[in-house]
Length: 358
Ligand SMILES: Cc1ncc(C[n+]2csc(CCOP(=O)(O)OP(=O)(O)O)c2C)c(N)n1
Ligand SMILES: [Mg+2]
Image (tube, rainbow, N blue to C red; front, side, top):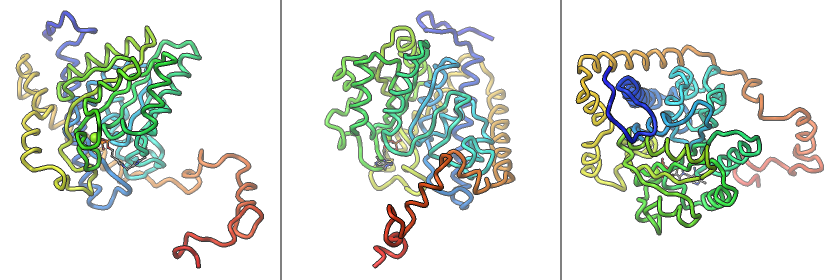
């Protein structure tokens, strides 16, 4: 296979790697389309946030991780789990809340998890993952390990207090963590321009005297190169950084949102013209990969996604005991006894059923 000329690349990447990355981007797109269908058929409960349009940012960043680096993300996380190698069946089964889901059916769409692959979740509280990422980086330093943490967050998370606290500590303690802001231009329905006093998010790194960089998040290689460079500086020189990947989500905030109340159809159509999937496929073809080969790859991926749905449907629900495992510590029963209604530390009566219980 032909080797691409990239003399200033921080690593070797041949067409074979690029092909695998395209396959992963395509898998994420089709996987999420299937998830949407299953959600609308009421087979998936809770929330379901799709990342269609953001696949280059996801795959580029995860490709830059070393095998023992740690990853932690927000709740729009299906693509991150898949890109980190969690099998599609385990991700789909988790969306279905089944026993062999990657979080044993306890987490659902927003809380995917696979610690064996260095993936520390899927966090549903906006910016909740930032202090945890900082703590993970501190723990690596304390253990004398040369590894880094990649912490993904949305543009909406940069106006939370946890952003300031985490970046400040990461900077004063020189922690090996890269905060990757996936800037898809909107929070739930408010544009970055309206929500952020400094909408050039990467510039905020300057307030902590750490490196801040912005990339075209729809350019797979640009994302991968920048992430690889910043992760290397984190690992080898304990330099934290902010990486802003500019991209766009094609779908609504969640499956329940049509995504048209706060932006126009024209805007979405215009952004779709630079679909990262199309760009990456064109780039592969330009490097000599025959279109028939890519068509075959796409058919293979579609079958894989269908198999993941069949697997999830056939997987058993976890038992109540399995769901509680890891939630309550030994000895909790005694604590609960003390908190029961009528007992010394308990409520006088249950107040949550039927309004205020009066
Ligand atoms: C602390 C907190 N406040 C509010 C919410 C509700 N909420 C869920 S997602 C979201 C918007 C986040 O937008 P962004 O960070 O840009 O991520 P994106 O959805 O664009 O991926 C909000 C306000 C929440 N989950 N957590
Ligand atoms: Mg956003």
